Length: 190
Image (cartoon, rainbow, N blue to C red; front, side, top):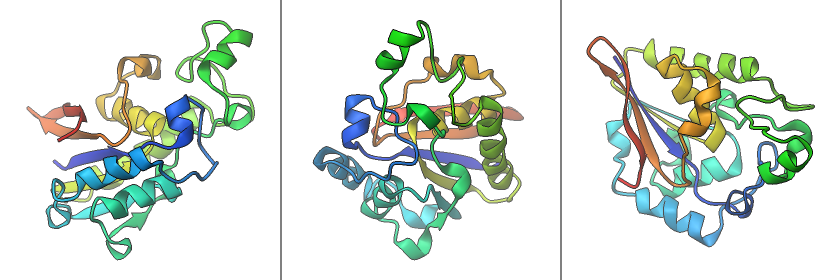
C-alpha cells in the first residue's frame, strides 16, 4: 500500500494570525520561506513517485522551496483548502463570538463547503494515491484540508478534527499498517 506524505505549506500572514484562508492567494512570510527551505534536502524528490500540490501560491511556493521543481509537481484542485465562504479572513474566535462553540469540524460554513463536499474531494485524492500502485505520494496542501484528509484515511468522523492540530511547514505520513491504515508520523519537523 502507498505511503502518502502530507506537507502543510509554510506560514502566511493569515495563518500566523489565525484567519481562515481558502481562496485568498497569499504568499509565505519570511518565517514561511524558512520553514519551506528547511525541508530541502530532507525530502528527496527522487523518493516520490507522484507529487501533488494545491494550486494556491502558498502550497506551490512551499513545494518549490522544498526542492520540487514545477515540472515535477502536478497541481491538484482537490487539495485546495476547505472553502470558508463567508468566514474567509475571519478568525475562529470572531466566529465563536457570534456562534458559541462553533468549529469548522462540527458547524456549518455559510457560503462555503460542507464537510461532505470536503470529504468527497479528499477521498478522491486518497483513492488516486492508494489505487496508484505507487510506493510514495507527496501532497502539498493546507491545514484543515490535510487534517480532513487524515480523518478520511483513518475512517474517522470529522468531529475529531480539533484532535489533530497541524503546524505550518510540517510533515505527516499516512501509511499502511497490519493490513489497514495508520498515521505513522504527525506534525513532524523531520
